[in-house]
Length: 267
Image 1 (cartoon, rainbow, N blue to C red):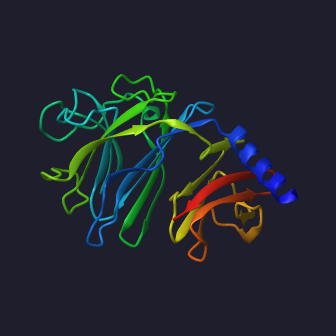
Image 2 (tube, rainbow, N blue to C red):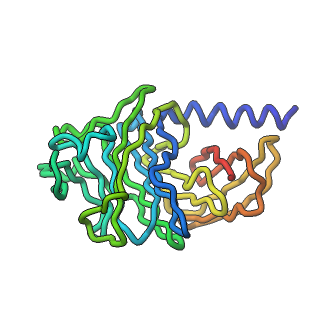
């Protein structure tokens, strides 16, 4: 009975602390022949007016997404928003309407741009995490919705190169994601935490920004049994979960003056 009560409290506190809309992890391009899948996830936190993008794909090509652009609409309408990670880094670009390379956004303020949180490579897979305001006030920036709705996403990736350019005939398409309420992201006392990838298969990374010092993480199964407990001082901490069975788990992360509980799925 105590374990069940503990589990309910953990889930409840996690939901109350983070009112975030999310697309979940959206599959854009299924990998094959050793090439990783290409996915994107948008988390929209109304409380902090922040959008967090997690883009995961092959590390040897540029990656690009256009939120709010319907598939079949060519390269979108003039000035539609585009987010590109290439050999120059993370770039805010805009669609030219017709064919051609999307130009850089002519934003007057750097506050309109995406801020890169992390760019990590594991094997042949790149994970890019970036943040931006929900509504930057720039007419060339997409205004992210804050309700349960559909979100079309146009995507493309490079053809064997990280230098931004033509994607090739088959390295592009579009999907429609659905925004739902989530508790996957939080912001507490200007301290930002993210877990990725989620779902995870072999390794889960804890990314704790704006916090310096030791912290403890504890992993619990659905019965409330603690199955892992370790300390770390690295804001990017990989956790080996290969030995876990497939299913849903909770991870509690705590430092000197904070404690947060999150949920993750082991594939």
